[in-house]
Length: 201
Image 1: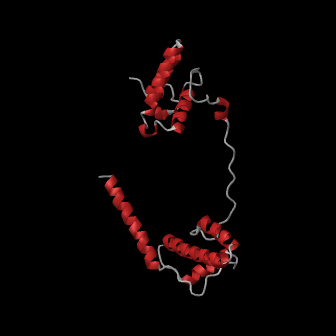
Image 2 (image 1 turned 90 degrees about the vertical axis):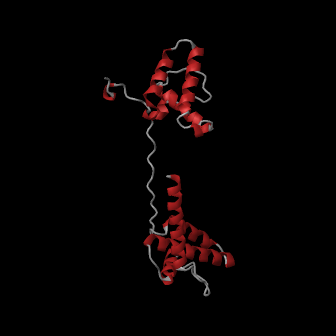
Image 3 (image 1 turned 30 degrees about the horizontal axis):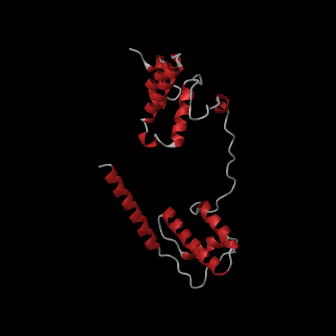
């Protein structure tokens, strides 16, 4: 009995050993026409593993790239896509810079901060409406994150701090009720559970 530990390691394991063996067989074919037919058949077989993506252009390109990689770039054939460069694949990705912006209140996230920056630039009625929308979204985020209620004055204070006192709610502004926020959240959770049960029947 032959154990996997004694076998040759797979370049891309998700395709399995059979695909790797087929590619190895294609490399032994000297006749270019036969080799091309063999490779075309291998590509079709690889595509059958994800039939819903088989005809998507990007996915087809990915299959050909993987075939070249698994053949150690030794196949010289007619491909609908340019052959990937081995040197580029070996290159280390550039180091990504870590976000330096500090979130003052984690439960509001970066989106609220971006919305506040936009609202500050507005004027008149548009600024007033946008400020009200932001305040209600802040309340929703606060309640969903903390799973409780919140005093509207807390939201007003946070809005003042986040906007450097540049955004103010109108005197007649009415916040969305905490009970309706929790109800909407519970309804979403209920429908998610319901859909999950349907899928797993």
